[in-house]
Picture (spheres, rainbow, N blue to C red):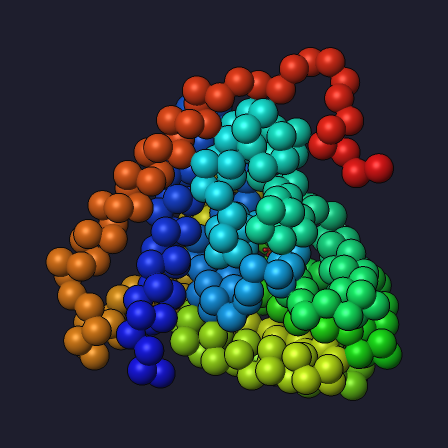
Amino acid sequence: MKDTKLLKNLYYQMLRIRMVEEEIADRYKEGQMRCPTHLYIGQEGVACGVCANLRQQDTVVSYHRSHGHYLAKGGNLKKMIAELYGKVTGCSGGRGGSQHLIDLSVNFGGAIPIVGETIPLAAGMAWASKMKKEDALTAVFFGDAAVEEGVLAESLNFASLKKLPILFVCENNLYSICTPLVFRQPDRPIYAFASAFSMPAYQGDGNKVIEVYQMTKKAIEYIKEGKGPVFLEFLTYRYREHCGPNFEPEGWRPKREFDYWLKKDPVLTMEKHLIVNKLSGRQEMEKMKREIKKEIKEAFDFARKSPFPKNNPNISQVYA
Ligand SMILES: Cc1ncc(C[n+]2csc(CCOP(=O)(O)OP(=O)(O)O)c2C)c(N)n1
Ligand SMILES: [Mg+2]
C-alpha cells in the first residue's frame, strides 16, 4: 500500500486511541470515573483498519469494549471522556458511561454490554437503510464470546437472507473474560461458522492495520454491489484485565502468549513500517504525540469541569 497519507493516518488513529486509554487507566484510580471500563489497548488495529473505510453516512455499532470504535468512527473525544465522568456533556448525556456510548451525530449507533445484543440491532439498522434505499452500510463489532449467543446466528441468517448491507466484525482476542476460546470452541475457527450462512467470511491478523484495512476495503466493495453481508474475523489480544485499568495478576494468562502478542503490537508494528519505509520519522511521530497529549488534556479538563446531569427524571436521553 503506497498511500502515505492514509498510512500515517492509520498510525495516528491507533496511537490516539492507545494514548487516550492509557490516560483513562492512569486516572481511573482517582475514583472520578465510576463506570465499569473495558479497555481496548492492544486491539486498536481492528477499529482503525475497519473505520478508515467508512464514510460519515455509514453506521458503526459496538459492544462493551467500545472506546476504539467510537473514536475511529470520528466520535468526539471530549464527549467520550465526559461520558466516562458521568457528565451531562457526555455523548450519552452522562447517563450511559463507558459501556453505553451512543452518538448519532457521527452515526455511532451505540454500545451495549449484554454480549451479542447489539448484533440484531445492527442488522435492523442495515435493513432500514436497505428499505430506504440509502447509500449506507452498517459495521458491527463484537467479541469472540458473541459467537456463543443465539442472536448472532439469527442475525447472520437474516442478513444473508435479505442481502443486508452489513459488515460483521468479530474481534477475536481469544478470551471471554477468563475462559480461552480453545476450551469454548475447540473444533472450528469462528469465520467457518459464519460461512455456513452463505456469506463470504475470512480471518485476518487484527494487529496488522494495513491487512485489516485491505480486507475491509474488499468486503465493503462486495457489500456496496448489493451482494449482501460479509463476515471478518480478526485475531487480536487485549493487554489489560477484562474490565478495569489494571493488568491481570501474573499467571492468569500464559506469559509466553502475552509476550507473543506484545511483539505483535499493532501501534509499534505500524511505527516500524513507517520508519523502515521512510514514510515518517521520529520527529514527526513525537509531534503527533505532543498534539494528542494536548487534545487529551483538554478533553479531561472539559470533562471534569462539566456539570453532572440534574437529578430530576428526564427522558431526553431515552429512546421512545
Ligand atoms: C448475555 C451476557 N452474558 C454474560 C455477560 C457477562 N460478560 C460480560 S463481558 C463477557 C465476555 C465477553 O467476551 P468477548 O465477547 O469475547 O469480548 P471481550 O471482552 O473479550 O472483548 C461476558 C461473558 C454479559 N454481559 N452478557
Ligand atoms: Mg474476547
